[in-house]
Length: 509
Length: 69
Image (tube, rainbow over all chains, first blue to last red; front, side, top):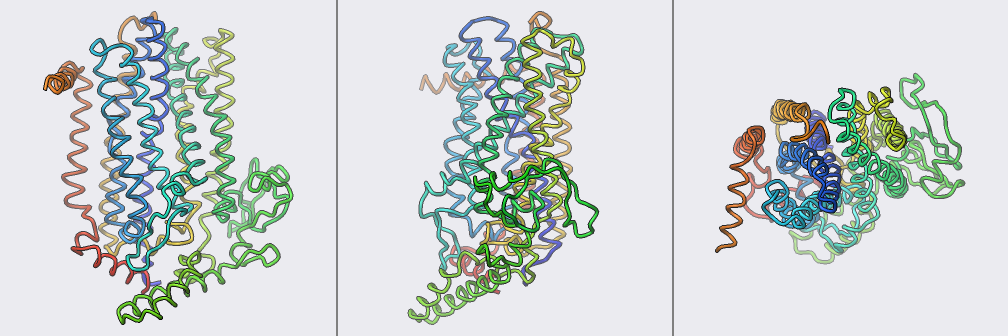
């Protein structure tokens, strides 16, 4: 494949991963904390109790710092689309255009208008409008995430579109099929619900630190109570939506599911690893650990007896289970690519019969199109150990957070929070674990679907622009320096504000 | 007009009455936005296809060439 300059592809991927993971430091905290602030604001509106006002103002301030530092970091990803991933950007342009335009017009303006009212509106607008503005900010933020996640979901499951051979662009045939595909729905719900866990862990972490330092005790206890309830609800939602995400992955991205579970040879009654490790095999093909029988089959197909294809089945094919081999798909992909070339030639010669023949051949092999760019059948396998470990650590941490919220809720309701030093110390560090889990979630989603930018249609090697690797390396390090400086600035400002504590009456609130 | 004036005053007063920390935060944001849009975007992240081609047809032809060769 002429396109495949591994250095360029890998540096472009590294740069995108760096910016996406960095962007995701701010987003989940914005999504989660906005609802906690809105809820506290509502309590103040209902009770007119100054304690709730102080609570709202303090968390609103930390929300504002995170929002301000994180604002527009996502736009860098669009810069990268335009420079590093121009083929891909052109091919998806019509699909991304609609969701991202709606995001820009509707959600961003909703969010940015009401955020000013939220911060500047104390005693300047009616209390009801002010409280509602906090909710609008929360819903606006989440609405922004919705459109971006719809775009991402389309790459994982390209539904509701057709490829135009004249323009080399995917065109939307049904907005609702794109926006409401099961992949988009489960991706959005899973992503935002785990973002609510991050918001809860942040509040809990800061509040637990106050209690350990014997500062703002009542304030911290109230914050922990609210965050624990919100976090527990979010944990249940994350588990449920995670399960529906896995069900969707099994349908549209079986290779990703196989990599998540380190499943090389497919089986019926497939087991799910609770804990697993690579068993010292240099090919990383041998996993061992504690398994729950049949759970993977149930998770993937809602049927304990269902066959879950493994990596070897997807690469070599499995005739008995009706799974074509990668080599078969590569051949069909090559036919589709040749049909596109023939169509172009026939169009230049104005040979309508030949054009129609090429279209027919292309359509018949379109779903294998991207496979035609691979030379080796094993190219379709993602990094299995990274996907496997990321998935299992993420799930393990998700379970841990659920238990932590229950423990905190129990200690809060029993009035034992101050005595539980171990619980408080774990709580302080829990935010770091939360960030590890949420970033690992994206690693599972994005590393697990390699080598595709658009599932089955476009591999990463064909998506990149013909630019020099040195150019991408230079901007990679520029971002690294810029992001590190901004992150240090944010953490410093946040810590200063946290040390300062709530504005007035903090010791008694 | 009065509504627009009130909205403007709302923003102006809001920014005027911000704490020193908030003002410092705004300085950081403005520096960040300047670096992103006036340095990175203008000098390092020119749109590849826009910089090479003037119209959509040429861009399509180029991408198709990339896909079939």
